[in-house]
Image 1 (cartoon, rainbow, N blue to C red):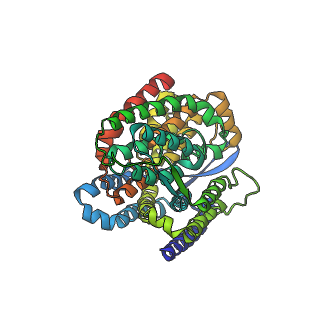
Image 2 (image 1 turned 30 degrees about the vertical axis):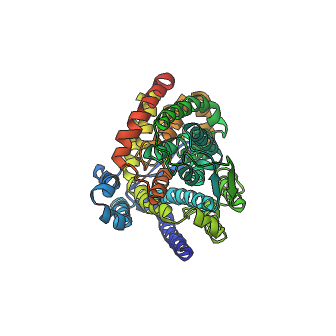
Image 3 (image 1 turned 90 degrees about the vertical axis):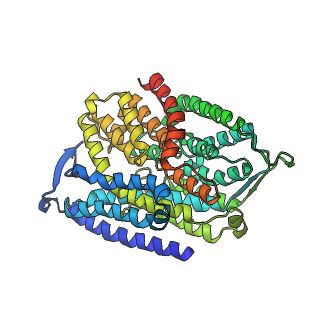
Length: 477
C-alpha cells in the first residue's frame, strides 16, 4: 500500500509539472491567444477567460446524480467503476477547457485547490489513524451529547477532518450495541461541519478567507453567538432521538469509566499538519512560492506527513482501528472528478453573482452560498460570493487591504457567507470532505448508511433547514 502511495504522489507531481509549465506559458502569451481578455483590477493586470457554455454543467450534474443513485440502483457497477466514472466526467471538462477555451488558468487553479484539499484530508486521515482512543463508558444519551460537544469544540483546533477521523471510530465502538444511522448523521452535522465554524483552521472556506485578509479572530468574534445556539439545538434534538433508542445489549456490562489514549507520536504529526496550514506565501512573505507549480511547501509537508506517519505508525493501533485507505481513496477519486467538473458551474455562478451584486442582500448571500455549498465544494463557493459581496463596494477580493476594508465597513455579508458555507456543508454527503470519509468508514464497519437522497429527505432537510431558516430570520433577514 505504501508503494501505491509513492506511485500516486509521483504521478500527481509529474502531471502538476507538465500542466503548470503549459499553463504558465499560455498565461504569458496573452497577445496570441484570442480567447483571453485582459482587464485591470485595482491597478493590477488580470487575465480572464471567456465563460464556458451553459451545457458544460452537464458533466457535473451527471456526476452528482451518479453519486446519489449509484449505490442504490447499480451498486455492483458503481463499486467497481466509480473511479473511472469520476475521472472520465472530469476529463470532459478538462478537454473542453483546453481545446475549446484554451484556458489553462482555470484548470491550474482547480488542480491547486484539489491538491490542497486532498493533502489536508489525506494527512489528517493517516495521522489520526495511528491514534487509538477508547472510551470505556456506557453510551447513554448524555454521554453521547458530551462526546459530540467535545468533537464540535476541538474541530476548531484540529479541523473538521482531524476531529472526524480522530473521534468517529471510538464513537462507533462506544455505541456498537445500539448504533443507528442517526448517530452518524448527527456526528456529521456537529463534528464534520458546523462545529468547525469558529476558526479559520476549522473549515477550508474560513481558511481561504484568512489567506485573503480576514483577521484570524474575526470568525469567533462574529459567529460564536450563532454557533452556540445552533449547537445547543442540534444536541437537544439528538438527545431526544437517542433517548428513544431503547436498544442496549450491554445493560449488564460493567464500565470502568476510563478513557484510553495511545499514539502520542501521531499527535505530533497532527501538530505538524496544523502548523503547515500557515506555511503559505499569503501568510508569511518569507515562505517561498513554487509557482508555476499548483502546490507549495505546505502541500509537500502534508504529503510527507501522510507517508511518514503511516510508515512509522504502531501496527497494533492501526489494526485496532481497522485502518485502511479505502475511505480516503474514495474521496480522492470522486473529488478529482468533482473539482474538475464543477469549474463551469462555479464560473457561471461567479459571473452572475458579480453582475447582480448590487441587487443581493445579506439574506440572498446566505441562501445562495448555503444552497450551493451543499453540492459544490464550499471553499470556492465561499470565495465566489465573497468576491460578489465586495463588488458591491468596488473592492477586490485579491487585495488584502481591500478585504480588511470590506470587513470593517459592513461585515454582515461576510458573516452570512461564512456561516452558510460551513453550516450548509452538512446538507449532503458531498458538502464537505469529511462527510464522505465518515460515511465510508461507517459502511466498512457494517453500518447501513442512508442513501444520498435519504440522507437529505429524512435527516438534513427536516432537521437542518428549519434551524437555518430561524438563523436567517434572526440574523440575516
